Image (cartoon, rainbow, N blue to C red; front, side):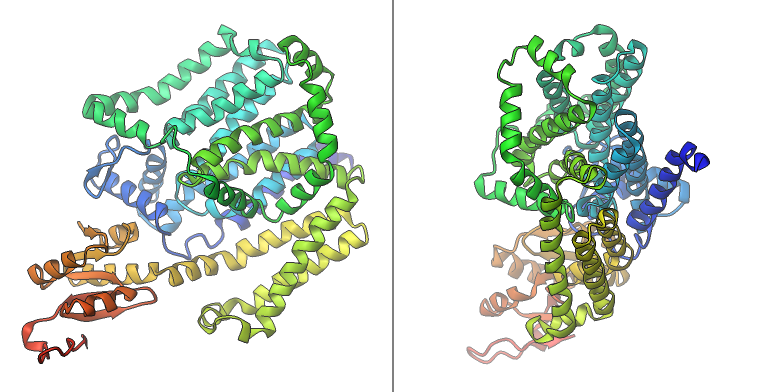
Length: 574
């Protein structure tokens, strides 16, 4: 036992690495790139690599100023190392950064709290649905989340440490991670973690600490060395156009509205599954207590008074306070930008995991919050059990097409959504606290290992992306020019076709009529529902291929038409 106690942190790290493999690495190449952001970012990286221009970012042969290049550099770096571009290789840097972030979260929180508390927090963050999904996609979202989380953890550590030399090193690391976040998501990559840190220091009464030159100087130099070269090069190359587009991409004063705010809250809830229910129940049950303690804390809000109150808090109370401050500060950004930038929502999983972990720690170790954990476990598990029974016996209640697409995973789906929730329910009933916690972990591992590729493929199939991939490959293999007549740009077409594409929004039917007439040999991708409109406007076409949502058409030559007076054009499947 003594040997295990001495090496417990290394055992935990080993467990976390195995967990990360099943959550983020296994089967991550068994589904195609997902529209729209993943295919967009991969297309940019591929173009950057093929042109050997790692500074200038282009999309569809046009300058793309919305994002800095760190994601593209990481993707291309791995492609160069492995000498190929594939779904596994392109997604590998995201999975690797997420894995390192999980380990870093454990070690930093372990130094501030107990190993048990740190382990619980890390497990909750690692197994949240949002972390699971976006660590498997080659997008900026998870990179920003990990870099911002790491920066805030470093800054938080300075509130607990009294050693001046240690503070200098930790602040340097905080600025380093802020620089990485900036090089991932631009202005918001700097603004969100910096605002969280400033708010955290202000509300803890330690704002003076931020103004110490020795803490600021080294970190700021590191920040400038990482961020300035690329930004300066872009300003020199593109001038005011770059500055204008780069800043306007954030829409700093644009609020999307109340409807979108509720959508953000819903996405936060879904992304935090299966832990979000316990967080909500605990907040509801502890609302009066939280309100009273918060008002008492800010009754005298002078910096000296806040600092005195901060010093009286226990370590766990400080960490919970910091997590709460970060959550509500970043929630403002989520409301403002979450409808456009998913990473603003995803970042909330970090403070939410810390808050949830505090109560789960007290439930497991101190045997508190029984009622809240009981309710928050029973309700979602009952929903999963009902869903599994519907999947097994209620075929008539579900669309037959959907059932056909999911037929290969019905059995494992039922097992996962029935057996594991039953174990979770019995564990809370019988006060098996650790088993109740582990049932959620096992549920997420099972979803990641067995269901994730199938769910991604299901989404792409029913969303029409498989159609677009198939049509793009067909046009590429036959060396035929391709155009689209659909509502938005789908970059999976750009990636798999790998040639210039004529995109056009499907509002102007006359454009399609003229295009088919002037380019009779070209293929055009249209939505299946638009065929009625095409026929109503007497546009002659041949149906070359058809899928779930989209179809591929070509101009119909005059010798193949059969039009007498007002008779509709005859449709041929070529």
